[in-house]
Image (tube, rainbow, N blue to C red; front, side, top):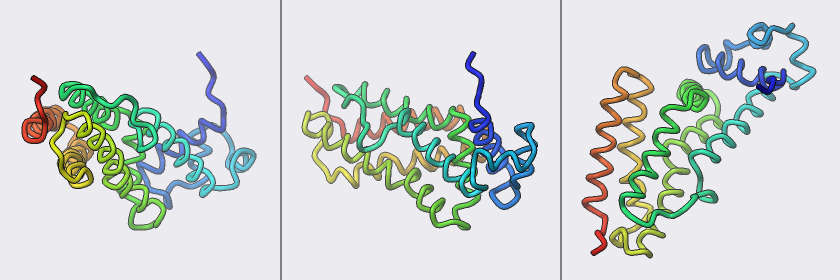
Length: 200
């Protein structure tokens, strides 16, 4: 098993502390203590706490883009409505199950009113980035005559908004995760039944 580098340990420890305590309460000394090093040793790897945060955001954005996707990384456009539903669920389950992404989301919810950069990141993942990605996907599916022709941005908004709300519930009330997954499954079926075009 590959040994985790100190620089990466610092990021993971900072993520834990940022998500639990918030940015202001997670001091350099606390981060260092969680890693098992002295506070000043942090500066051999990062310029300070803001540098740690910026590096953490870059790392987590890469993780998100690789696993969830974005407008430049859609993976394969679904060929059937069944594939579309499976693809939606794959992305949903990633953001629901990935512990690091869940911690980032918790941190962002706490810090969005403190920092404009975090506010923009939160908006991107709650709405704008996902809307752009799904608008492009739905547009491609309209071209394949899998989805009825509508404004793809509005259709994407209709698709993602209830799921984002249900995801928030799983974050606040983890005991309702299975309930929300069942509701998401029903909602995706409903969306497909309304807007999908069945192949004969």
